[in-house]
Image (cartoon, rainbow, N blue to C red; front, side, top):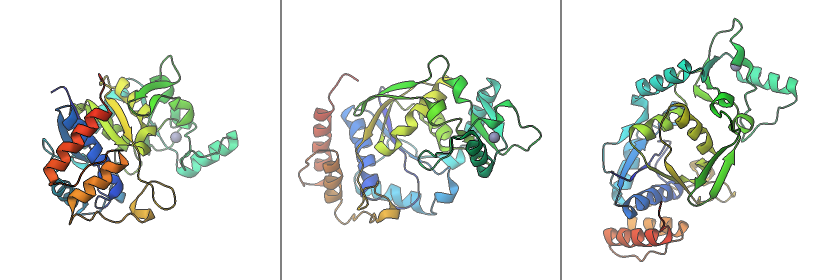
Length: 296
Ligand SMILES: [Zn+2]
């Protein structure tokens, strides 16, 4: 199979208008390439997950005519795979245990005069790179400076956003691979699963674009292929931020799935006529293919 794409929702609630856009875009891109489209439930962050949300999401996708071409993968059942990847990184000196609490990190940053958070996240100052110094390990972190090797900036080309670059070590810092609560971090799980499922093309919302450089560094460190990336426009809520349950996204009205597909297609700049569902999806696929026609 030369194209395998995926939609990877977090089961934090039912699909809303914004998440349907990401689902539809990934499905259209797979169809336009005569590829496979897989669904993966990203439930590593257990605290954010809502019981019953995953089956609801799958039901909603089915009502919209979006059917996965394979078994639905659930991240919370795949810890053994993630541990294997972590072990590989540890063996290469690219992962290390960290004893720092959030307030340890805040204090160290303040002492160094770098306490400006990035997207609300503190940039880890690298305290435990030299060892735990008698403290107990809490989390495992990725050694971003060594992973970046000779070039500080990680470069990639997004099919919609164009050339991108990020100095992960400087702008993000040594990010967490396994959290203090024992769960594996999103970044590691995504990279392991994309490779395990043979994903060749990642089509997802633009809010996730910032994770791409981190994921590429992990792919390289684990000797895994880097997929193609296309980040789609977001649906914004009334406050101008990404539409989410927190800022008033209503659950999808699937009494009329064709209308829901039409609205999602509009965000992707596709004007799709309202006909019968499968015909609406067929036309949307043609329009998508025409819009993104290229040799990728
Ligand atoms: Zn630490």
